[in-house]
Image (tube, rainbow over all chains, first blue to last red; front, side, top):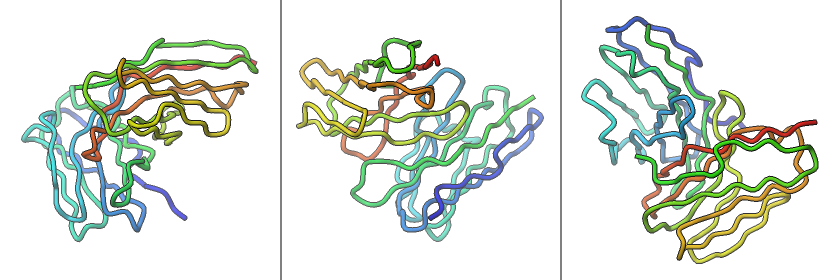
Length: 113
Length: 110
């Protein structure tokens, strides 16, 4: 039984570069979430998918952020023209329909220099 | 924005002692959940309490919920070194999205 996986675990990039993160949810889970967590804070909701449909995006998700979930399986989160303020842990979580508990991946730590 | 606020921000206890942390929130909820996060890692779900429940137990964990005060508490009994982590409450208004607090960092001393 594999849990939620995320790749890469760490990413260091220069300001202005684009980065893409991948999340593989637990296989039977149809809902997938992205959160951002900065040091000393709890995770903040960014967006979520039910199957391949992106149902909601937070106001935190600027136009530089885009997420996809083709075919309702894995998801990618892309940040274009990264800024130092994008430095954070990006967490992915998944769950089944009608279940409230979420299962989190280990996160991708992004550092923008 | 974060809905929940945990108190205290940090807690240091001796192994074997109990740890209590509190969470307050602002808007109506369907359920409230507690998660644990070990240093720099993903979150692990601990326990969920629904808005019509007042108390719930799971192993060494006891959660209470007071919807009239919009508050919850998490008690960890007989703490162990492995309980050292950050603990977050998260509220769900019934739309399957979680709103987290800033967390309580618990250190259990041997």
